[in-house]
Amino acid sequence: MNFKGLIMIAGLILIFTACSQNVVDNVKLETSEDSLSYAIGVTTYKGVTQQGWDIDPLAMAKGMIDAENDEGIFNDITSTAYINMYAMKEQEKMLMEENMEFIAENEAFLSENSTKEGVITTESGLQYKVLVMGDGEKPSETDKVRVHYTGTIIDGTVFDSSVEKGEPAEFPVNGVIAGWIEGLQLMPVGSKFLFYIPSDLAYGARGAGAIIKPFASLIFEIELLDIITEK
Image (cartoon, rainbow, N blue to C red; front, side):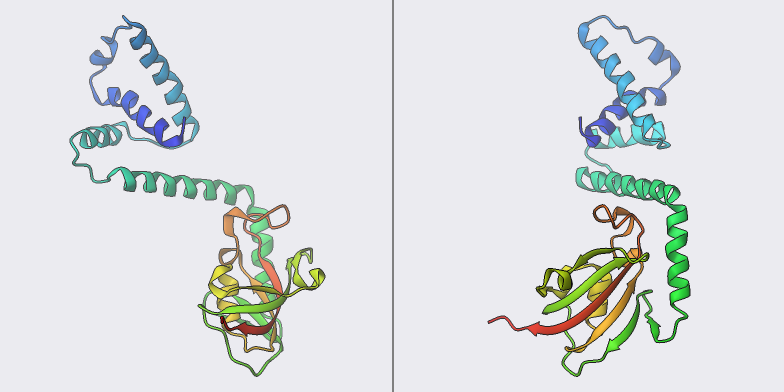
């Protein structure tokens, strides 16, 4: 059963709590359908409470009744979107609690790095250092570029490198992580920059693969070779 279905069934069960205890006590399991309904109520309630969410049965009951009368504050689409958003925030909160030491380590690295000679910090928190300043044009967000790059986490572990692959990479500027989108637009063609990218401008709470853990800051050495003109 999908999560949306779980919540909807939970609403049917929890709506009883908005009624008097007498109404609940008077429910009889006289048919196989009654017993099925009761069994679904037990298992669904357990499933919902295991999410750790504090659900208000009165608000849920109102939602069920409003939906039945087609006059809800949320419709089916916005309700699903809100549930998904809430679930994502709860997941991120849990991940933050599990990775507090790692988050602190990455924040300390960026804080110290920002004081080093030649390191510039932008308003977004992106840090960069110019290794070679080119004299070509700067790409816009809608351009496609050709670059060489090497990406590491803060302990120096390489997770990806076009240099090691021996072939430059090509991609649209707006098709990469936020730190790259901002950083590439700072670079004239022919430049080589070092970028220090906070997790919220990289992969955030989701991480990426085995090496890039949730909330990891990333370091990229990027050489902008060319802006590709589509023919």
